[in-house]
Image 1 (cartoon, rainbow, N blue to C red):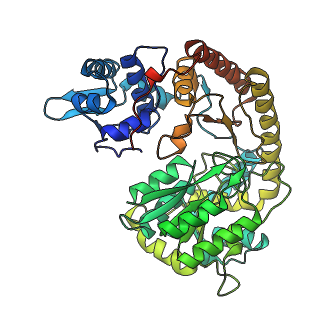
Image 2: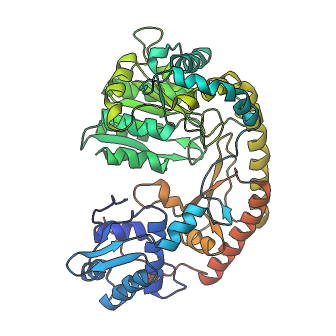
Image 3: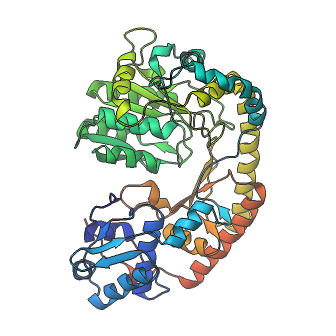
Length: 484
């Protein structure tokens, strides 16, 4: 589990996050390397206090000398600061901050961020003369301008879910929407259900709102409906966060009949479904479209999506730098969110909303261009992986921005660390879980330029070969004890 900034992580939690060590290097060095990766990956936030050397030695069954050497290696590298009486706290070295800020990584496979969609530049130029209109509107607008909300509502209506502008709130991207929903609807110690794996920033938002998280599995083949229904019934979560279209990171899509079953089960228990549809427009070759998930709600009126809150965004489909998203919910829920919003922000910038109006008017053509790019890039990355890493299991998602690749041994974190040394940034599989699982998986976006995809896979293959030479068979001596 992730620790919060300025908090303490227990020895048991740290052991769970570390998992297996690389048997090809000294234990203290491998231990320090795994902690360093957890810090740079964000799973242990800067400022978190680590367990004492004595406590960690006892819990791991290692000698205190080994743990002392590991902590010292972290201090020497700038990842740990120790003060007498205050313990040892993790930190990010100044060089790491500068490199991250400068984007100095040679090839970025960590972020699933496509380039601005073809045609966006022309829209920005044409919308330029309208920017001054923002000066005629309110300086603070908690709901979003009525023209944009009307355009978003119309798009839902056209896709089979009648919607009015008072059921829409415009936000500063999808992540802002998720965070606002979590902090408004959840009380401390409420239970929230998430998928495993899932979008890391979503579970961070739920956890920061004070939720206790329970999980239900998703694979590249889809959802375990029986497990999901049983978990809903046993945990009775206040809120359930799901990504039913081109799931991040697996790429799976929830079939229409499963959506109906999930909606019925949640409704019977009084669980609010928060449906993340920020990837719903990223269809490449899925033959069906079930429309918005909220169509499966039992409605009191034709425009009601009772018990289901939908999050949308233009960031993934159009451009990551366009921080424009929205929430679609019952009008009463929108009013509740608007009342809570000033504690965090005072509204979405008007200039971006004017641009958003122009983008929504051109969405069919823009999405066609996006689909063309994703089709080409998915095909290239798939071919490269099959050629250079044939032992990996490479799925064929029907949409989305990435591949959830299965490795032939549980070494995702070690691969991430080694690849970084080669100039390739990755996100290890455990980042997408709350318990350190998915060491056999890694998410590989196909959004990078074609040349970067080609060079990146070559670097991946080199790193994996180096790991295989180091580790012909995972040694039992390299394993930390399993803690429950």
